[in-house]
Image (cartoon, rainbow, N blue to C red):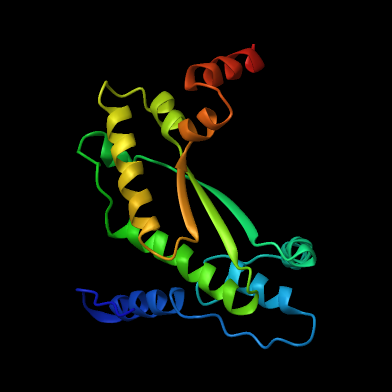
Amino acid sequence: MDFTIECDGSFRSKVETALKNAFSPVVCETSGDRIEKCVAEALIGTKKIRLNNYDDTQRSYMENLISRYMAVGAPIEMIGMWGAVKAYGLDHNRSGMDVYDAMAVNRLECVANDVKRFYSPGMNTTIICEDITESVIGQCGIHLPQLIENYSAVIGKYAASLSGSVVFTTETELLQSIGKTPNEFLTLGEELTD
């Protein structure tokens, strides 16, 4: 993946290097039964792409978790949340995705590809678009739920057009899969806080 950044000086160089490193395959020497070490490196990242440090307990925890998936030959399951509306999206039609959305989804795909290089069952990533949470927190007009629905659909279609290792769903779809409605979910939340 090639990137061209329109700006001058050392900032341009730093940004291009960071982007190149973020989308470059992980290099890891596999040694015997320590494949989980390489998979953890793919998931946690390297100092080239991380902005902060982590301690060894996080790496050990991740390697132990990966070992459990490997013991049964199952794909590693990753679940994450995705805010469906950016702050400026409340005033504009955010029914489409932007370059930052595409880069984030592509980065998740790169991580999945790295994992698969070391562990053939690979990784399944489920991203949950916060359609209910964003609507309730936002409280910003009648059109917000429709904007969130459109945005979630567009980004989900984009992810599906790639390798298929990253799947987008919404909070509403998850609730429907267990026979619940968003209102039932929100009412439950009120009961728990009373």
